[in-house]
Length: 241
Image (cartoon, rainbow, N blue to C red; front, top):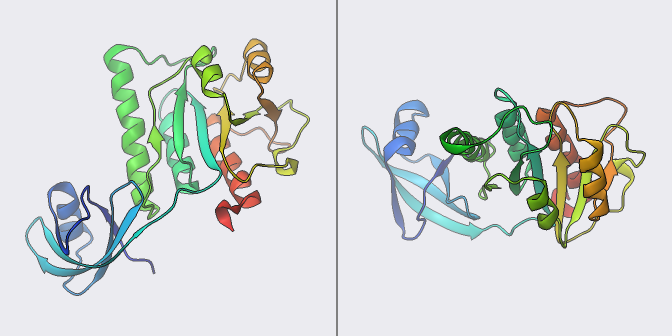
């Protein structure tokens, strides 16, 4: 079984202390013991292998055994996820993070029912970022995906420059599993809302160099399509080799 992983912003030094929510979780929920092996990650690629040296009521003292900087995977995977009602957006972020997505770009598509405006938008973005952080921790990832501010379609078209952009669409003739995929650079996976990508949006995205692709014969929900596509790309590139 892999060692439990906790988050710590600064992994320098031979002795580290987990405090606050992470310390309480380690001490009272996971009930780590002196001598137990645990991992710490800073979310930016550094992982520290540690041993529990001491325990407090809401803190854990750790002795650092080793450190390593995990390289960013290639190609870099970016999920462009349309805003979704309810908790489907958070589900999409959670699943994609578990699969290994490197960046999430919230997209305000034409058929999105939800609009991220003002305080409501700030709260929604904070939930997506918190979801990505917790999912990365659960998945023992040393690197956490970046969740950017939301974009509209013109912003997305600009973001596509210099990338391989794959637009998931149920009527596409090209199968994602049959494509030649790049070994480096960025791959953008564009997932529309529950109502689908409009013909105008599809024309704009393909006109800017994107390619419409399908996953299979079934139509996936917006909350699962991104993770499924990321898994296909990861399996067909060196990311999972």
